[in-house]
Structure formats: C-alpha cells, structure tokens
Image (cartoon, rainbow, N blue to C red; front, side, top):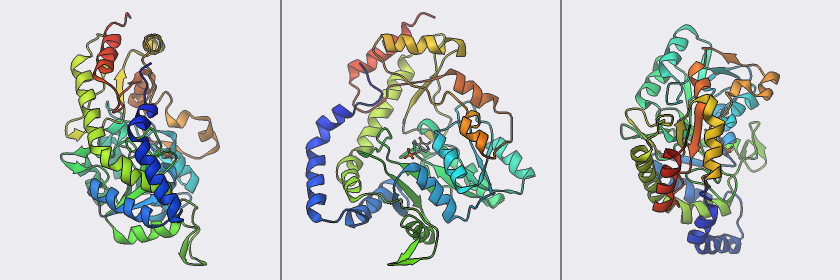
Length: 370
Ligand SMILES: *Cc1c(COP(=O)(O)O)cnc(C)c1O
C-alpha cells in the first residue's frame, strides 16, 4: 500500500541517529527547557529566516499563546478561515475570543480581498489568524499591508507551510508572529507532539517564554496566567540533530513529486489544485478536486488500488458540533470553501515515496473510470 506518510521508512533511514540522540539527552539528565531546546530554537529560526523561535507543546497552543501575547482577550473578534485544521479555530475559542469566518479563494486560502472589504467596515476586528493551507503561501505583501493599514495583529498559522515562500519571502514573516506544529505528519514532524512560535520581535519572545512556563518570570514568581506548554529536550534534540538537517532535501523531494503529479495527472474529472502566482509551496499536501457527487467513488477507487488518500477538509469549521457551544460569526457567504470541502481529495506526497510509486499513483488516478 502507498501510504500518506511512511514512518517506518523514515525510521529505517533515521532510527540509529534518533537512538543516539536520545541516548545523549537521557545521559545528560536535563529533560525540560534545557540546552537542546535553546539549540533547536536557534537552528529553526536560522533555517526559517526569522530572528526568534520558541518551542511549545503543540501547534494549537502555539496559536493560543501567540494571540495571548499580543493581547487577545475573551470577547475579542478574530478573523480566520473556515477551511483548516480544527485547531486554528479551537485556539481562538480556547481564549474565549470570537472567530469571524471569511470565505476562501479557489486555492482554499482565505480571500484577502474579502478580508480587506470586511476590515474596512469593521473596526471591532483586531486580530487575524490566516492559514497557509496545504503548503501554499498567502500573499505576504498584502498580509503586511492589512496589518499596517487596519492596525490588526496577525498570527500566521504555518503548521503546513514551513519553508514555503511568497515571491522569495518566507511564510510567517509578514505577521507579528507565526505558529507551527511538529505533529508527526507535518513536514517537520517530531516523534510526538511539539510546536513553535516564531517572531522577529524580541519583546514578544520574552512574553511567549513566560506564558509557556506557568506565566513564570523567575523562580516562584508568576505574573501571568500561563500554560504548561513546553517542548521536551528529547523532541528538540531529535528535531535539531536528525530531522531539521533533512528538512530542505525532504521539501525538495516533495516539490519533485508535486511536479510529477502536475505533469502526469490527466483526467477530465480530476483537477490538481496547484499554487497561486507567487506562492512557492512546501507541498505539505497534494490536493486534487473531483466532482462532489463522485468524491466517494474516487476515494474508493484509490483505496482499491492500494493508494491511500484523505480529505482536507470535509467539513467547514463553523459546521462542527463544538461550534454550537461557542460564539462565532460567518461574515461572508463561504461558497468557495464549501465547494472545496465537497470536492477535495489529498494524494500521497511524503518524501519517502519511490519513483515507481509516484508513477503508480499517476497511473491509478488516470485510469479511474467515472
Ligand atoms: C496541524 C495543524 C494545527 C495544529 O497543530 P497541533 O500540533 O496538532 O496542535 C494547526 N493548524 C493547522 C493548519 C494544522 O495543519
């Protein structure tokens, strides 16, 4: 079976290095917020092209802590997308803030023209959590302009877009902060949960480091209502020594696979979603669109041919049952996001796919009988 993520192949290639790194941390006797977290934060920030990175426990809390550090409080309105992992909206809800949903464009990215129109009429929206979905980057210049013109604070959700760029500029550098996740399936995945917040603003780094550690400003001095949201030394060391050095080659391989799919997939009812002009994707996912009434059949065909597939995402966030217990706003009709929910299927695009498997995926897609 061709898997969406092949952790066994990854282990076969990296396992001995992971075990050696684990041994070093174990022997050091320092397991939480020590030198390996600091070292990883430095290497991650350098590779990303940002000034500061702070490790946290997961991507959800990365967004929560970033918004809190920027002053987001219960009742505040936060602009965001209805087409994302649930965690994007959950972070806003956990603060007690109110998500305000705006439709996406044809690439599934929140529509920045609609955002501009809304911000023009709505002075009460002070925060914005855009998502660089599937690995595609939103227009970073326009994000920067929205932030300045409307004096809003932006936290970019970069859980799917580590190393993505827009016109050569790194994703995550347009807002006040960027949040990312090291959930195992992400492009830079740990062997467990993890996340990070990136920023170019040194004072924000200070606030994040207080908030992630019980709101502690010094030993037994608690000045904020914080979290226990720390990245472990073991995870940081494995990321730093074993996975981070492979991230560029892994991303390069994802790009090669995407290129093969874009060239090779030719079927009247299967359209590759592709990338908007200016976006250089990290290809976290490879989404294709099929007619909504044929989506089940297409997924069953792939599975019958031993090609794994998934949906990102089958349901607009505001339709989730949990939202019934929360306050939220649907600011524009979300017809485009809904259409993507109804028609999107993700094909395997992990870096351990072989050339033969890439050809097989293309052949299976192209031979689907409607
Ligand atoms: C994975 C993901 C998150 C959440 O990250 P966790 O580490 O699982 O909490 C948030 N946003 C997006 C877009 C994601 O893909």
